[in-house]
Length: 185
Ligand SMILES: CC(C)(COP(=O)(O)OP(=O)(O)OC[C@H]1O[C@@H](n2cnc3c(N)ncnc32)[C@H](O)[C@@H]1OP(=O)(O)O)[C@@H](O)C(=O)NCCC(=O)NCCS
Image (cartoon, rainbow, N blue to C red):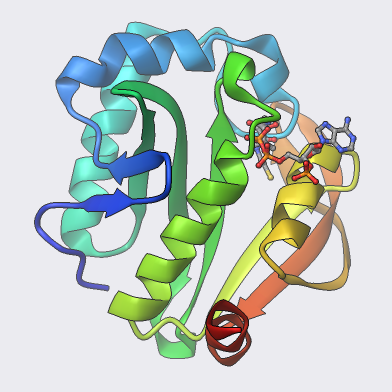
């Protein structure tokens, strides 16, 4: 996929943008939360080196067009991340993932970020199908996915291993035609 040189996606309250080296400390602070590691592959403890590596990785992957990772900014503060990975160009599909800093959870930020990101992906790429998966135990994420109207497709057994633990996941997808119709209505 070809991504814009400057990523600045505006939601109602948030801005999605690429991270810079100046975001290393903020990313470290968010990721050093033991609860974040139950359902993600983010390492714990999360070091300065991990944050620097990730920001660099995100820049490189954006250039290759394989992955896109944006910081979620609220009132000029980094409060989370959203991104795509597992892009399959020939099938025009990809997968999204996200997390929100603990103190900002439960305020609709993930839902807003997913909407903002999906609006961008469907408007500016040929993506036809976007997949989102979450552990059967991850009720807040399940709620976010259902908020944006994704279709539940079934349970994939032990599909993801997060920090050494295999999770059965609920698998969802959003198709271009369904999403555009939903956003118009
Ligand atoms: C999942 C996560 C991103 C949600 O972020 P958020 O900003 O709190 O999400 P939102 O506020 O948009 O929506 C959360 C919804 O879950 C609901 N919720 C929160 N805790 C819940 C619980 N224990 N049981 C059921 N629902 C719950 C909220 O009420 C809200 O529902 P609503 O939109 O109907 O009000 C956040 O909890 C997180 O970062 N978790 C750790 C990382 C993670 O799991 N990432 C996703 C991997 S698939």
